[in-house]
Image 1: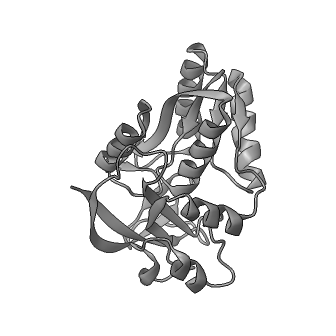
Image 2: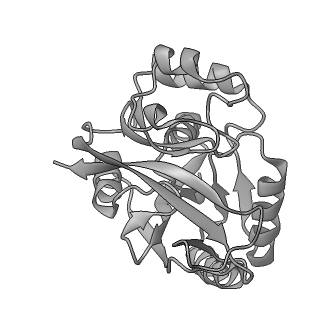
Length: 244
């Protein structure tokens, strides 16, 4: 079997991609690798608390490795830290990196170009598949997932902190991809065939947070006094999940 690591986001697409790759039996997944915001102890972008990430990995049964980034991370720093980590993983004989991406060509090209620098091959088990079909297959297999972050420019507060089911799918506006592949929403997968046990949690408060992309290309949560770059402001609804 080919030795690999899995880029684990904590969400549904990661969970389904991991399921598919394990079913194929071609790759030996030795590590889950996740980016974590070190200032807030939360999964980058998803806003999921680190202790729920730990509980996921424990239930899946694959060792978890975290890459810590500051909240004010520049693209240069991001690329530097990622290259250091992928080089380390390559030195361990992990020659393949597996992702849950579905159809974002620019993102895939970026990933592949950076992996090529250290001699790692990207693997995309969900690539170019129909997202409606993927999500319904995911649910039919018994996976369970909840939205933890939604883009407030595209979806209202009522879409965050919701279990994804047929009602959720049917209520999405026509311009929203059902898997949130364009960044419309992010999820936390807490049960399904890759888990030994469901990950127990309770739903906490919902919070609206605004971010800006500064001139140094770092993304930051901003106050009304922080300098902003026009057209890059965006807001997200987060639902804080608490481990129980």
